[in-house]
Image (tube, rainbow, N blue to C red; front, side, top):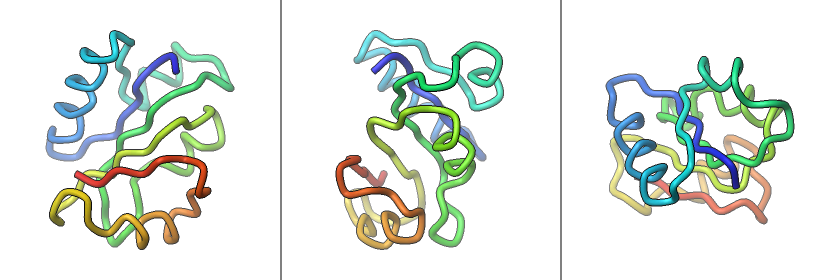
Length: 100
């Protein structure tokens, strides 16, 4: 895994992404920054905020990068809604999903 890429609305997802990147000692990029700095196929962890069960900009990230794990940030309790998030975003079972 080479980087953490995120999309944030209120700043919470950005904060989580930076914490994770620091712990993993990898670069952290917003989706806009990553588009200019990371080549297609780069292995990433993707963090995005949830709206109506959809992880924002996840579809774009999935098309360009190799997703190693997904963290979805929303209003629900941490660890809940994983099944619904996985189904609504078509995330394969082999990719770990975390909700925050």
